[in-house]
Image 1 (cartoon, rainbow, N blue to C red):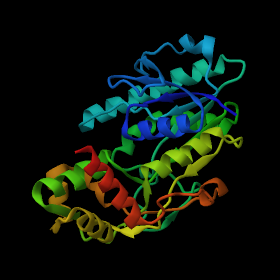
Image 2 (cartoon, rainbow, N blue to C red):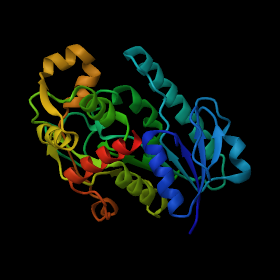
Image 3 (cartoon, rainbow, N blue to C red):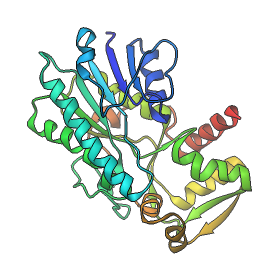
Image 4 (cartoon, rainbow, N blue to C red):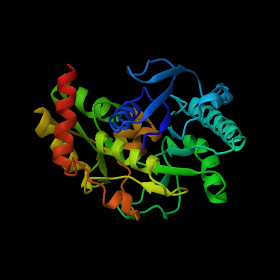
Length: 303
């Protein structure tokens, strides 16, 4: 059955993929964006979640909201401020939802950094939170939805993807573009930390499944590929780009990029799920080599 779905942050790396997946499934999409217009066929609304008057949607309420919007912060202080602004924006959105006779299903997209460095141990939806890196501040925007989920009064689901492989975000910035520019791809640290991977298309498909299925008030860890060590991941990138491998020590990484990036690039975790919806999902790129190969091919096609 076709749904009216509001996507917040639809112009981002993952947001574009989610809109494409939902549109291909026949759903009607309205998208909020700040700067970059959304694709054709999407009802686009230029707005900022910090100030948008949600009551503007009352005449055409969405059935589902997929929340991918994140208030950015480049440095420590600005991320702290962004976290507080995100928290206030979440409370404003929840207050509007509480006024509706039937609130839309809210799907809040977070990330597995909220679990912290698990030293390669398995993480499920029941694992305790210990946010590190960027999530130390950004989790503030998630807390209001976690609170509503625990109350079981509003229909809220939270999804937590691991490392998302695709033509954008961290993969391009730290691996693909440096490999193409310098002919080298960098292994950060000793390479033993575990990385759980998911290609952006499979991530979008899993998010769409969570959004449109009937089981509400759940947390879902997303994943598709078996975990690989960082060293194995770098070898795959080198193989697909033709680059040589260089190594940067953990201490040099921290000196160059700071604690936040160091934590994000070296944390170790094996992401798993207890949910059949995720365990049984028909992923298209469930092998790390295929996922990396596809991401590189997509980036090559953009050149």
